[in-house]
Amino acid sequence: MSQTDYRTVWSSESGDLRKKNQNKPSVTSLLPQQQTVYLHRETKGRGGKGVTLVKNLVLSEEDMNALARKIKQACGTGGTVKDGVIEIQGENREKIANVLLKLGYIVKLAGG
Image (cartoon, rainbow, N blue to C red; front, side, top):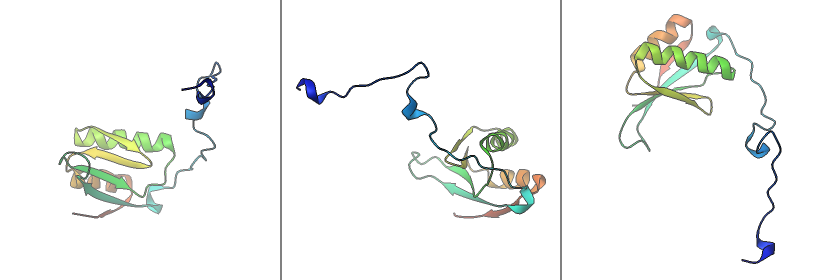
């Protein structure tokens, strides 16, 4: 490779700014009574292991993480939040539905 093929990389004291949340709008949380939550079961891309997906939530990032923490504690399993969807390990739709109903959400079971 010639000298011109290399890209110059520059970083500041705050690190690589390309990886920071750039222009990501903040989301305000809706009340639980105003939201219909869908619970999906999915195994695709996970080596045959099932996860339960909690979709269609309109929550801020802090509220989403707090809700995921409550659900994980109620189910006794692990999980994560990815792209506005809460993923809980295992088939726990009934437990998750009970937790969400107690919090005031409208819950619908979707998928297999």
